[in-house]
Structure formats: C-alpha cells, structure tokens
Amino acid sequence: MLRIGLFGGSFDPVHLGHLLVAQAAREELRLERLFFIAAAQSPFKPDRQPTSAPLRLRLLRLALAGLEWCELDDQEIRRGGISYTIDTVRNYAKRFAEAKLFYLIGADHLQQLPKWREAPELARLVEMAVIPRPGQGDTVLPAPFRGKTLVGFPLGVSSSQIRTRIKAGLPIDTLVPPAVAEAIRNNRLYL
Ligand code: ATP
Image 1 (cartoon, rainbow, N blue to C red):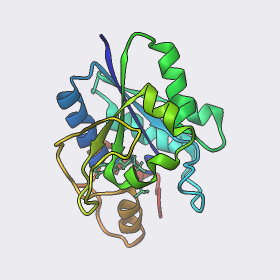
Image 2 (spheres, rainbow, N blue to C red):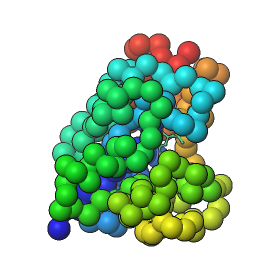
Image 3 (cartoon, rainbow, N blue to C red):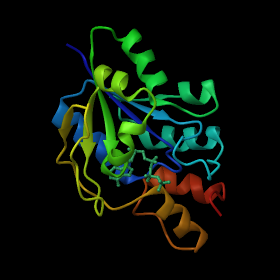
C-alpha cells in the first residue's frame, strides 16, 4: 500500500524545522511521497495576512529542490480563501483511494485539533503523525484522532522567529536552507 504524507502550513517562510519534520516523517512512517501543502489563509491565523503566495511557493521550491520524494501542492492557494484541511484531505483520499494517508502536525496544533472543521471525518480519513516541538510539551492526540508521535529531530525554530530576526537585522543563515536565505536577502523579503 502506497504511504503518503501530507504536510500543511503557512510556510512563511519555510525553515529547517519543516525540513527536519519531513525527513523524520519519511523515515519513521516509511513514506513514498510527501506533499507540502501551502495554505492560502490559515483559519487559526486570522490576524495575520500571509506573505504573497507566489513568494512563499518560490521559497518552498528552493527548499525542496533535489528532494525527489517531496512535492509542492498549491491546491489551497488555487482554491483561495480560508484553507480547511478537510477539503484538501478529501481531495487526496479521492486521488489516492488505495493509499494510506498520514497528516503531519506539530505538537503546537494538538489542542485545537478537535475544533478543526469536520474533525470526525478528518480523523477517519487520515492517520495523524505528531511532531514534537520544543516548548510545546504534550504530544497526546485528542479523540477521535488516531496516529502516533514521531521521534523526529526536535528543533525550536519557527517562521515567526525568522520574520522577527530579519526585521531586527539578525542573521537567519543557519535556520533556513542556503538557497532560501539567499532569495530572502536578494529580494529583501520580510523587512
Ligand atoms: P509561525 O511561527 O508563523 O506560526 P511555524 O513555524 O509554526 O509558523 P507553519 O508553516 O505554521 O510554521 O507550520 C506548518 C506545520 O509545521 C505545523 O504543523 C507546525 O506545527 C509544524 N512545525 C513548524 N515548525 C516546526 C518545528 N520547528 N518543529 C516541529 N514542527 C514544526
């Protein structure tokens, strides 16, 4: 049975924490393919307008170059509006009817999970893979979700931290892939 990972997020910008999640998921869940799904607008970040989608996608493309098992999915951006995971997962369930689908989620989202749109249906369609995140504590999945916690490579880096550092004039070179750091610098992003 084909094993597919789904990794949704704002990726504003993509950073090494995301790539380590991908690597851990590939190994621990024995994934054949992993899709990075960039959100148009997260339902949980209503106060923040994300950076333009083409820019976020461009940085993601640079970050994923050469990782042939990773793919970029822009369906939520093409749909526009608020991005609900259930819509995206339904699309994958239809497209890969025979596959086992894993949804990757950082421990910081666990508390909110039961409030996600159509949570029971989402729990039926995917197995969750919880990624520990330094400072986020508990990795227990709330009912009715099923799945497991990955060991991963816990790294306490976040997109908001990177945006704050850029605004403060601090270097980000060790926190994102080199090509992403270069593109952010050359295009004067997140200033
Ligand atoms: P922000 O700081 O803007 O909230 P973020 O760094 O959490 O952004 P997102 O794009 O919102 O990044 O995250 C996408 C997914 O990746 C979420 O499930 C999130 O929990 C997870 N994630 C992000 N960074 C890490 C990390 N360092 N370790 C584990 N999981 C992470």
